[in-house]
Amino acid sequence: MTEKLNADKMVMPCGPLHDQLLLSVKNDGNKITFTFDVSVSKNDYSDEIFNKCGAFSKCDMIIELKKDALIDLAFETAVNYKTNKYQGLELDERKFTDYMNYCERAEFLDCMVGETMFTVNFSLMKFTSKYRKLKKYSSCRASFEYESVSWNWY
Image (cartoon, rainbow, N blue to C red; front, side, top):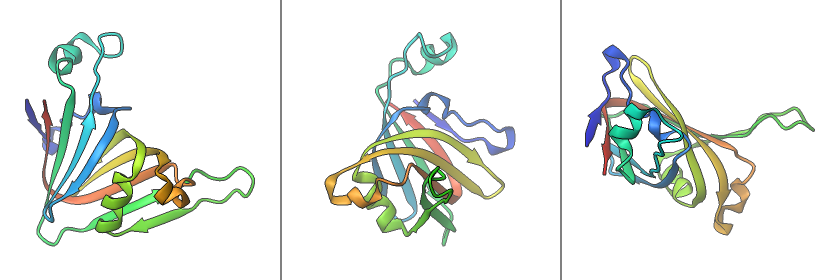
């Protein structure tokens, strides 16, 4: 099943992805694909959502980018209670894709749409030993100047 973003009516069929595990990120230049492992149980979702998505085990969220798209990618920390400081790490597309694919546990939090930008937020929980230095970052914000967004459930 494929669903598309309808920004005019604020229809974003990403609700069932909340807390779902990110499996991979693929960057094809003009298209970013986030692949999720999906488990929609009857206990956690309405009958409508369960009946629509309960049979699927994977979902690709595909963001088609505008030509020469503005892209804003960052890892962020929570405010450290000892130092009362926030830290952010701005990323280029290559590092973003690499780091996200080396994150052993990243979960979808939410997405937002503006007039020209589509933003996805993830919680980051554990990185492989190769990227242990990134463990202080607890969230990821990825904003893209988009042409279209779709969700392919399978």
